[in-house]
Length: 266
Ligand SMILES: Cc1cc2nc3c(=O)[nH]c(=O)nc-3n(C[C@H](O)[C@H](O)[C@H](O)COP(=O)(O)OP(=O)(O)OC[C@H]3O[C@@H](n4cnc5c(N)ncnc54)[C@H](O)[C@@H]3O)c2cc1C
Ligand code: FES
Image (cartoon, rainbow, N blue to C red):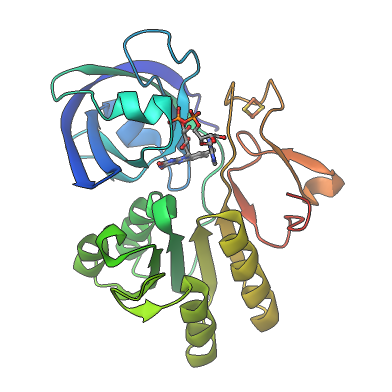
């Protein structure tokens, strides 16, 4: 039975700056911690006022079901995320979720590769934890502008993942694109499934690499959203899903099979 999303208020348990411009906030929200699936997202009101008016979408980054907490990892982009970064421990946040369709999880043990570009790493930790619990093998490829901005490397390693890094400036790992690493991994091992989240050009390259090796790939897409529940059509992208030309990222996504997405029609 589909889980209905709820609007709730959660207390901020911790709020840390990981590196300039990147933050992680952990919120007490027992029902969300029970219900959210990897790849789903929540809408968060970023300040105690109605400015900005719209809640902002953030993927569930990590969940501690026992403690009843959910975490979000975010990068400051504009007014909403700037205001969010000023919220203090002990304050309350207004959250709506869980929303959208998450990642497909294979029934049988599989060799999975997770590819995160920049803040696109956000939904992958919860996914990695879930895959690990099911006994799947994990290779995690992280791309960032600089070594300092490589996020969550230790957390993935603690889950037993093989982690490889690519940075634009070469200050950590391979100098170049994270997709270079993916191409090599696809040559080296028989991968069952690739999961990716990051900027559109990266996702497009991931999709092409996977198609070339006939490896299924799930991508989490990112668009500015308004309602977040399928009513306003502000988040549509072109897909082949169900023979329809357009899909709402907030409702039919944010996770899609990479073969469904019409990559040249952003
Ligand atoms: C399903 C989903 C999950 C997301 N998960 C995360 C996450 O886990 N962590 C995270 O940091 N961000 C995530 N985002 C992006 C996040 O929602 C935006 O960065 C945020 O809404 C920006 O709000 P703002 O008020 O700070 O910026 P605004 O003032 O609204 O915008 C600042 C600038 O960023 C651009 N922008 C706004 N929203 C987006 C967007 N979604 N994608 C690309 N550019 C945008 C605007 O056009 C503008 O140029 C997610 C987006 C979606 C759709
Ligand atoms: S944000 Fe309104 S339909 Fe997706």
